[in-house]
Length: 496
Image (tube, rainbow, N blue to C red):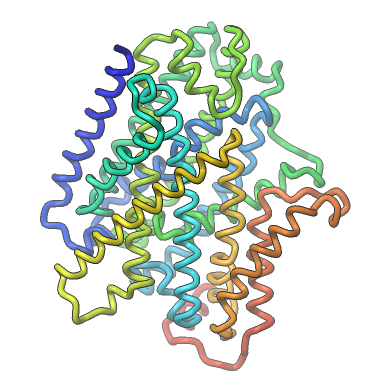
């Protein structure tokens, strides 16, 4: 009976999303789908982006890491905070000045068509892997703790959930997602706070008592002072900053929502508001992780990692309303990370790869048909990737996500950095080779880092090393003395 009620809650939640999608997608067109007609409210975008950035990965994996590495992840979060300022004051002015729909068209204006296509393809690869990894984790939890009990397999769960996401995103796109993500962020953060308060109350702890108990258990360790360690403070902060610059500032999904705001000033308000809330939310997730491990010890629950939060919330005899809060929080974390990614990938492929904006002969109806086909194909690709991650899953996935970002976003960061901070002209025919060679070289280095680097272990700075190597290769095989396009030159001078 419990599982049936939980399934009903999932379906009712989805019905609300469908209602919002129907309302917001009235009179929608391709511009509504791609950039929300550039009339999104900045405060809506800021709040909704919390749900997109946190995702089910944060909801499940971040609390699960506390038992092993304490608050180590918060070092990366501090880096995130610094990176958002770079996005707000360096990248957003560039995108608004050039009036971009896809941010990767900057690469064409500055470096050429091959660089543009290469950058877009690396985004498509990066976001597909990142989004499906997040999606896989949440589907796994739903199948294991809810759907399996009523006879729905993992494969069927994945197909049904992707079908639901398709239903409410295929028409409205960004115009719909700005509103649905805001609603889902409210649910997710509410669930987080309710779970923290309940466990503290159950264990008869206040905030200071909670912190002291976690200190006694060794869960609050945050600063890693050993430079040779993968979690060294400076490496984590710098890695976090560049991860934000790459995964937010150079990510069509995140920037698609930002540039849907009508003007630069409001978009910057959105980014800065968002970054402060993000830091606070991540800290509360880590606090929840410490509380969950304390509770598990008290109750004799021998579970750790990604299964900790779901097991306690759904299988340890907590009140049913806590189970419901967890479930709503989980699916609220699921949908924003998946729907935004699906929309952004569709937008990028249509605009950057198929050249939809350049096609003046196709009618609006023909473009819409193409967009819907692409949207459905990406949903199928998502499904294939989810099944792949099921085969290789080995426990905690948050670190795997950061590693994937380090390999795939490095060349993208190098391309944008080269365009913004140099006046040189790349040899476009070599750009795809360089962008493939750099992550391959970094993978080999990562496999032998302790041996080759005298015990030094590469952590989140993998992204920086990858980007720096690609940047140097672009610099070596570039030409000087050629004028850059007028708009890019003005932007370059403004930045410098």
